[in-house]
Image 1 (cartoon, rainbow, N blue to C red):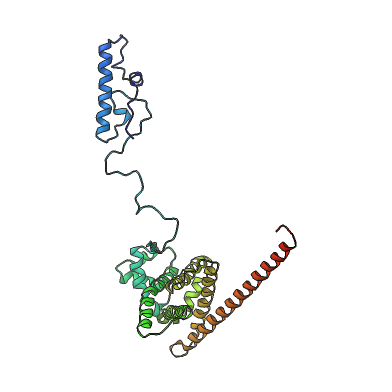
Image 2 (cartoon, helix red, strand yellow):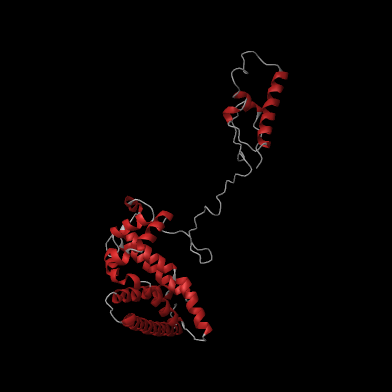
Length: 313
């Protein structure tokens, strides 16, 4: 919007003392002053620069809306700097819970977990391996829980690549995988991600059970179940969206705990346990759906009978 030219009366009212002498000015002098004030404003506007009011030869009192100092300045926030208040799979949030320095330390520390567990010793050794001082582990906001969280996040993020490879192999061999089979396969792949640290996983579970870490642990479990259902192509938009994720979270948590005591070869007993739990959830879900359909049909029939009797329903 172009700047308005303020009234000359306002300009003269606020003019410096040197120009507003006690002697009356001639009409020619007044015209010269007005011309000078107008030309100053026009030149400032054409150059797209904001000239502070105190720097005008004639300070002006006006409601002018000035343009930015340069044409490259944009008053609107850029798309990259705007925070989205919604989630979109087409535009996923790329933010990581770890900074580059934290990722470097945790990656190095994770190699010491099989020997030293999820402990401060593993973090200190990882910091040394990464070229940092031992005190650098203080950068981790949650201490040893950050190492546990690093394991869970990295294993969850690796599921996308595993799913693509798994489903591609099934398609090449002509093997049909229903939704239930795909959920089981991906859940098993995630459980196998604990294989290298299974001897230390009870320590991790004890850390996650601490009151200050329970919210983050449950949040990561919810993200895992949501990731699995998304990768298998779940497109539900009804209340089953929540029940599917809640039930899978419960099944995974119980299977993960069972796995810590499983001594069978290749964790065969854990695989059987997982199948049984998923089958139970499927049967219970089918029963609930059948009951829900029966209740809905009965209620609808009852309302129709009451309406036929003339009740205003």
